[in-house]
Every structure is written in structure tokens, then in C-alpha cells.
Image (tube, rainbow, N blue to C red):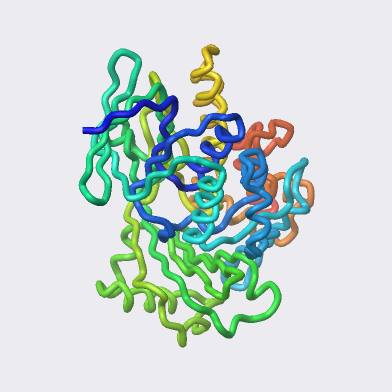
Length: 411
């Protein structure tokens, strides 16, 4: 079996792993990336939020991404019955980007990896990690490529950005109960050749079916659109077992979008992901760190997945670089506590979305402009800005605001 040594190995070539590799390459460390699949490959997480832009820029990707002409995303729209709540990222609290993109991820992720390859980063596609073992301060990784050829790689440090593959979580028994239970998702794409002009054809929209169930519409600049549902497992059980017929039945449950997509064929058979929320016991250990969805995934309702993937991938790369250079890194305070602070903010918003409290706040007929700006900053991904009271005291702020609004309605 062929053996080799690497300072840093990254598992997974999605946005989290690519951003980690991009940052390391800019700092003269060419990490090895191991990727199980062949790119381009389909995945979700197609709606970004502005916080991602800071991380793309720092990892050296912003220029190449701006050349792709992706659909710009300036905010988000939520619809419930006849009520509409719109958030404009340019009217958010604090500094930061006021736009981002809606992207077909198969293309988007390949743009990142193609750029890394041009920058000299070694990416091994169709290469599966079959075992990992830690001894004498070194990791031994056994891989198998598409032809069945096995290799042994020794490394000082592993950045696990394997996403839904959850390589280290599986191998090291790190799985933990999720923060959101019993929610699943189903989605597909259409080629929307008669798309409406303006906001109806270019902005992401979430339509609420009921308090716990919602539909997404994400239009891309290439003419395709992403359609999907998220809801309790029990909600999906009422539809036809044939996944294509069942998805069409679900579309008829919408009110705002009902009949709009009747004449379109699905570009691929709808994909269902059961129990989408994931969690782990801890985010780092001796010689390894978990980033993005390989660590934790909450829920797609506020499009936070790629933001956490990019933020954690970049931070993991910075700290791993310091560690292999002999500096002392306090992983608990510098990584885990930091990432968890952001996760906890979004957890509050996701939980209160499904409790209905946040929906009441969103659809209030006369929202406070100041409060809306502060909530908008959270939706834009700036969940580490302690100047924002809806970040600093997120749980208390949401609950207090909801109580005030409830009292107004009963007065």
C-alpha cells in the first residue's frame, strides 16, 4: 500500500473544505483534499446569506465567483396566506455585505474546486476515507479510490468538512441528538422557461403551508429554479408514495404558488432527506476539527448552512495553521465556543419559527423599523455581532417582543 505524509488533510471539497483549502493555499500550505464524489455533483444549500461573502473573499474566491453571473440575492420574502414579510439586506443593523447569491450548487462548488486546482491544491475526487486512526500524535487515514486502489496517508491534522458524509462523526462515534427533531425535506429543480419578471422571478421566497411546514422557491440565473418543502415527517406521510406524484400533490398544498409549476417537468426525480437536523458531541479533538454540516446542521429555513460551513471552514484553517506552526491554540474558546455562539443564535430563531412566535413577529402588520433591521442582520448571518440586541440577548429579545405584540393584539 502506497504511503505518504501531509501536514493537513481536509475531508470534503464542498464550500467549507474549499474555503479552508483556499485560505491555507494563500498562506503557502497546500493541504490535501479527499472528496468521495466526482464534481459536479448535486447538493442543496443553494441560497447563501451575506456573511458568506466575507469568507469567500478571505479565502481568495470572490473574484472568480463574481465572474459567474449568479442570481444576486438582496433579501428574502416570506408569504403566509395573504400576508407578506420582506427583508432587505441593505436595511439591516450594523455593517457587512448587503447582498449575496442564489446558486446551483453543482456548478458553484465546481467553480471553487476548479479554482483551487489552478492554484495548485491537490484534490482527489472519487476517493473514500475507509478508516482513520490516531496514534503517537499522528492520524493514519486509509483511502480507496474509484478503482479500488488503497493508500495510507499520515497527517498531523484533519479538517473534517465532509458534510452529510460525516466521516469523523461516524468513525469516532461523535453523533449526538439533534436540536430540531423529526423534520425532513424534499426538493427538485425545474427549467422555468416562462419565469415572471421582477421580484416574482428572481427573489427567494418561502411560503408557509402551516406553522411547521413551508415551501421554498429559489430562482437561478441559468433559468432553472429550485423547489422544495420542509416539514415534520408526519406531514409527508399523507402524500403518494411515488415521490414524483407525491411532490405534485405537495405543490397543490401551496396557495401563492398553486398551479404556477403545473406545466413543468422535474429536471430530476425529487430527492428526500429524512431527519435533516444533525449534531455532534464536540467540534474538535486532538489533531482534528469538524466544520460545516459534518459538525451540525439546524434547518434550511434561514439558509444558514453555507454561512456556518464557510465561517467554520475558514476559522478551522486559521487555527490549524497556527497549530502546525507550533503555536498554542485554545480550541475550546477560539473555535468551539465561537461557533456555538452563532449556532445558538440561529437555534433560537429556528425553534421560534416552528413554535410560531417568529412567524407572528414577521407578519406583524406594523413592525418597528429598528427591530426589523436588527432581525434582518441575523437573517444576513451576522450572528456574532454583540452590538445587536437580537444577537446579544437573542432568546430573551424574541420572547419579549412576541409578548409585547400579543398584548397589543388583545388590548
